[in-house]
Length: 154
Ligand SMILES: [Fe+2]
Ligand SMILES: [Fe+2]
Image 1 (cartoon, rainbow, N blue to C red):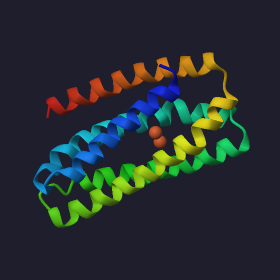
Image 2: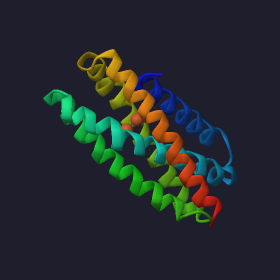
Image 3: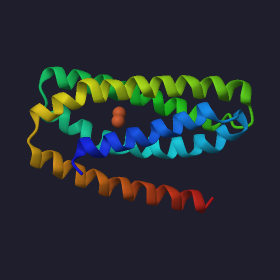
C-alpha cells in the first residue's frame, strides 16, 4: 500500500467506529471509545513522525501550510482523547466531548483527503509514496505492539 492508501484505510476504519457510536446506546460508548483512541493514537503517531515531516521538508508552500494546520488539529485531538479517557463513568461530560471529538476528526480527515492528499499525489513520486507507506505500516505495527504490551502490564 502506498502512504495515501494506508492513511485512507485508517480513516475509513475510524469512520466505521464513529458510526458505531451513533448507532449504539451510551452504555456501549466507553468500549468503542477505547478502540477509537487506540486507532487515532497510532494514526497520529505515524503521520507526525514520518508523513508530516516529509511534507514540510519537500512540499510546496501551500502543502506546508495545510500540514502546519494539521499538526495543530492533531494537538487538539490528542488533548481531547486524553480528557475523554479520564471521563469514563461521567456520561454527562463524556458524551458531549465524544461528539465534539468526532466532529473535529471528521473535519480533519476531510481536509487531509480533500486538500492535503491531492497535493501530495502531485508533488511526490510514486516510489516515494510507496516507501513512505511501507515505513509507516511498519512503524504502526511497532507502535501498536508497544502500547498493547504497556496496557497488558498495568
Ligand atoms: Fe489522517
Ligand atoms: Fe492527520
